Length: 607
Picture 1 (tube, rainbow, N blue to C red):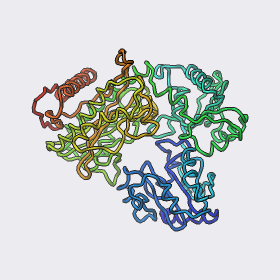
Picture 2 (picture 1 turned 135 degrees about the horizontal axis):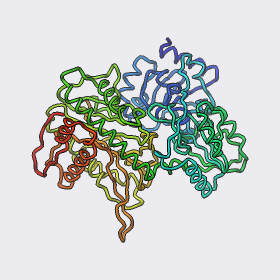
Picture 3 (picture 1 turned 90 degrees about the vertical axis):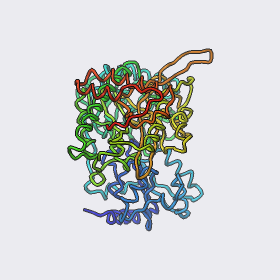
Picture 4 (picture 1 turned 30 degrees about the horizontal axis):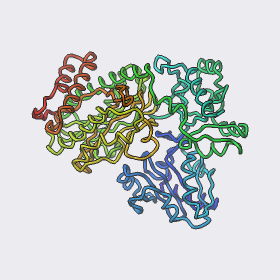
């Protein structure tokens, strides 16, 4: 087995052979997915760093990794003695790695990368920011395939039908809607590179990606045909027959670029530059007209239809029942048997799997005890797995994929008697969760305009968190799915108008390094509120169902409106979940969801 130093040396030899001065490797696959198949997880194989975000830079004398603040500590540890260093540590406070490239490259140097796994947007940014260096760019350079001898195979799963009982619309209707909007945009073609767009459009799902029920595929929507690029054996005969009837033509995945090159010059194609690789973009013939924007399926699937919303309600009940049984199991077993973060993660997934139409977790659950909870995207490993004690703070962020919806929920509970500091932090976070959930806002409001509601109580007490407040959630698709989000950032997602039918997370937090993390997350659905002389107003409906640990609440910090929300929410949790619980489980949940009164002194019950 090669060491990281040996792999790096072999890569540098290939670079020398091709006169490459800088080679760049991202955490990405050809679909720019969030959860990358093992075949494309080049950075963990090459460097040992297994975080979900990172970019590697290699020159003849330097090898480094650029990542974001979530992974600074992890990267420092995992890169030790690997030959790679964390670039962020030598460029502190900088958020753009192009500055490092500019400082490191000489005029006329050659920069190379594999264009299959770089978006149009990123490659343009590289070219534009480095124009003064007059670099030579090679966007069609794969140096890894020849080095990675024991590379995992490309995932293979068969597609399955996602019934209209769940999706609410026939695939023929969706295709017609997309074509109608293409016509308005003046586009003869639409290139779909995100598998979730394709799954939604064709009412199918697959198992090629971990955590998301997707099939590796591209699609080109035309005025009369939909070309689906995937392995033909992935489409069962019954589905293939219906596809044929609807003008959906199955072509080999590898022929995508070749087919794009045959399109008529002068025709117009709609594509998303953030999710389309520079390799595919360069496959189009000269003279093609490009409309660069969000894809039409991305916009349409963000707004759930009435059938999807009904299904989401059922999925939340199943998820809430599993969570309730989990927390009861935890209470009864902690201290009696050895429990660790990984054991809890496995148990929670097992309880979810007992629910009807369960497909698997929607992401790798974050089960983080005490100091581990201060790492927002912590993922327990065999090395980091921590035993759960009888005191302290436990944060669990988890979710499930069901045929009738996707869930994502975070609960923070006390394992013993919480301190006043812990209760204060928890209550300020809870105020943020409640205040966003109670928002009433005019139609046309964008995500960044709502973010302050979740942070205000924290800011007023000198606290904050470094991530966004809310992300869009798919329907039996990606757990993180735009275009909507709630965040202070000025990116396109936070500037997306929040519309009725959009499902978004509500997850303010506080992290105290080395001590604990507190996050309370529910999913909220945008619904219509009222029409007034000042226009249409919208609000949120909280759809997640799980008790909030009252032992961590300092009631003196909540106002009557916030207490009213909590009591109403807990009443709904009990009403909807109790029919699926045993008598003993009902009694336990009743105590956890009982009302609190303004001015009441908080109790410090253990979980």
